[in-house]
Length: 311
Image 1 (cartoon, rainbow, N blue to C red):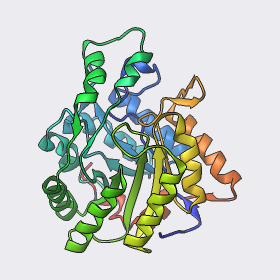
Image 2: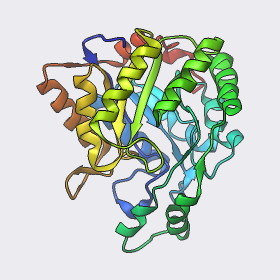
Image 3: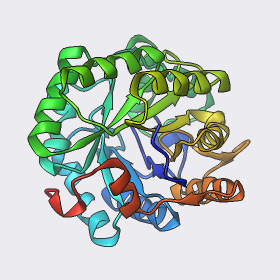
Image 4: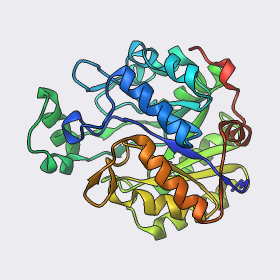
């Protein structure tokens, strides 16, 4: 694992899992997403992992127009690295999921390293009243959906987005097998190091939020990639801060944001993404570690630069 002594904080402000009825603080309009992302960057996030929303009802949107409604605002106000999702939502086709990345040609994109059941249906039990007609069915039927990325899909994203635009990837690994899939594509020469591996824990359908799993993922990544990778990790829900802290202790980096957890503490909703960034920043700095700037993150990840994007 590559280490610099500094910790990169990524922030995922909105995602495609949580719905407006779950938290009044979830940003869904372009202005809300931009403002929340900018505030998170000012709090210390060097990377912003971004999804788009339909501004009319807050539903997940793959449309380039919805991304472009907030990307220029963020770039004008912040030097943070923009990371566009290619995962989108399990309800979207691959072509739809790539719409934002094609238009933005960002420095960084997320890339799910395999298919998985992505079940967040239990979240429906905590909602007393739904604001929009789409929400309840979308959440409850997630137990029947697969977040689909076949090896041919992965290769297409690597070629079309990576090789086509000089975009690098946040390789989202929801299980140990995803590391081996990543190693397969590295051996084929479709991607080049350093590889940003994002361990994702606590999704029903993926690897569980057990600290032993995090240590094991780092062990396997070390055996497969040596010093050719940069590690980061997060866990969904209540395990968010504990897993981020363990990742930092293992020499890795961290990700927070309302995509991953709506809470700042037990039973307390986070009022902003910046609240979560400030909390993990304080925890990391109390460990005697420093936070990486966007420029330092770019250097570590060998990104093309914020002046080489299309927004």
